[in-house]
Image 1 (cartoon, rainbow, N blue to C red):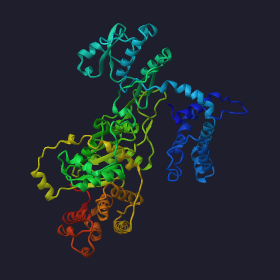
Image 2: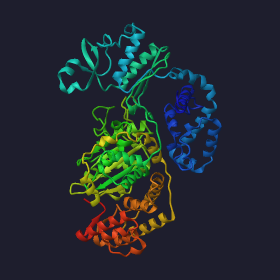
Image 3: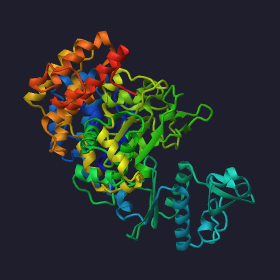
Image 4: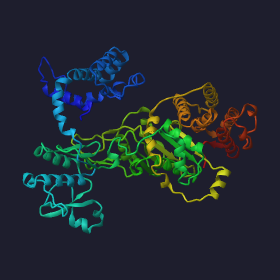
Length: 632
C-alpha cells in the first residue's frame, strides 16, 4: 500500500496538473514544489526550530487525522519562533506545506477511490523479490513465457535464451561478449552465465551489475502488455525489484538481507550485557567484564568510540567481536576499513563523482559509503564501521564530514546528481543513527595526535594489560576464533539501536560535585570540557545504570572521567604537573588525597582508573618533561 507521504505527493502533483496560471491567478504551486513540500513536513525540517518540543512526533506523516493535524497547524502558525524561522529561512514554504497537508487530509475521502485504484495491484504479495537484476529478469521472463508462449511475438525487442529455460534470444541490458568472458580472465567474474543473450548475431552474458534504467524500460513494457496479470515494481532507492502475479498470493524471496528494510528473521529481546560478555568470551578473547560494559554503554551514549592503548592489546578484536555477536548478517552489517597514511580527503570513505562520465558516482573500495546506505535502509539494525589505525593520517582531513554530521545531524553533500540518473548514490546522505563508528589508534612515530575537537566528540577507551591478565592469558588456550561469536546476540540488535537513539540523562549530587571539581582544575590548563561533554556524561550514567546495574556510581564516574575528561590533557611538565597533582587528589579517597602520586597508592583511589592514568601521565612528565593521555 502507498504510504501517507506517497499519497500526499500524489495529491500535490494532481494540484500542479490541475492548476492553470493566469494574470489574475498566477500558478501558486510550481512543478518542483511537490517534492520540496513533501520534505518540509519531515521532523528535521518542520520542527527543527524547537526539536525538544516536538520530539514526540516523528513527522506530520504520523498524523492521519484531520482534526489532529489542524491542532498542530494552529499551534505552529501562532508560534513566533516558527513563523520567524519560516520567514527568514524558507520564504513561507513550511506554512505552505502545512496548509496543503491539512487540505489533503480534509479532502482525502474525495481522492480515496483514485488512490485505491492505484494501489489495487499491490494488495497481493509479490511472487518474487530480488536485489539482483539478472536473477530477477530471468525469473520474470520464465514466468511470462509460461503464461504466454507468444510473449516473444508480442515483445520482439525483448527475447530470452537459456539452455535451462528454452529462451531464444534477447537484446537487453549491459553485456559481456561470451567469447571474451570465456577467454579473458579479467572478464570471467564480471558476468552472470545463467542467461545467454543474443545481439546482432553474437552471444553475450549479462554483466552482474545492470543499470536500473534498462530494468525500468523492461518493467514499463511488461506492465503495459500484461496489466491485468503481472506487475513489476522497482524501488530504486532500496534496490528491491518485485514481481506481482495479481491472481496469486504466494511469495518467494531471493533478496539480500540488506535490501529488506527492518526485516529480521530473529525474534528480538531486550539487551543483556551478560549475554554479550559471554558471546565475546566464547571467542577465546580475554577482556575484563567492566571493559566490555563500558564499551557497549559508550556506543549507546554516542555512536563514535575511539579505542586507544597498547598495540596488540585487543582493541580491534573487541570491536569485531561485539559487532559479530550482535549482527544477523556480519557481511552486511560490519565494515572494517584500514586507514591509509596517504588519506588527505574524504574520497576513501565517501567516494567521488566521475568527472569523465557525468551521472556516474565512484563508490569507495573501502565500503564505507555502502554500509551507510545499507544502514539507512534498515534503521532498526545496528551497523558498524571500524576504522583501523585511525590516526595513521590526519583525521580532520578525511573524517571532517562525519565529525560535522555527528553534531549537526545535517546531510553530507556527495554530488550534484543529474535528474535522469540511475545511480543508487543520493545527492546527499545522512549519517545513520544506527551506524556505530569505532576508531582504533596506536601512538608511535608513524601516527598523528588527535585534536581536542575530535576527542571531544568521542568516548576514548584505553586498553592496558595488567600483570594478572597477562599471566592468565599465558596459561589459557591462545587459539582465538572470532567467528564463534557470530549472531549469538543478534536477537538484541534492535533493542541496542533503540537504547542508542534515546537521549535519557541521569544526574546526582555526587556527579554534579565531581564534574564541577574536575572542571575547575582542567580549566587551569585550558583542557576544560563543554556542555556537550557534560550532557554525554549524564547520558553515559543513565545508560550504565540501565544496562549494567552492577556498577557503582563511583565506578561509573571513574569511567566517565577517564573516557571524557582526561583524553585532552597533553603538554609539558611545567604546564601539567600542578593540574595532575590536583586531579590526583580529586581521584583519591578522602583520607588519601595528599598521598604521593605512586603506583602503589592507586589502590587507595576513589576513582582507580582515573588515578592509574594520572599516575602514568605524571611519571611520563617526570621522565620526559612532556606527557599526553595517549601512550605508545
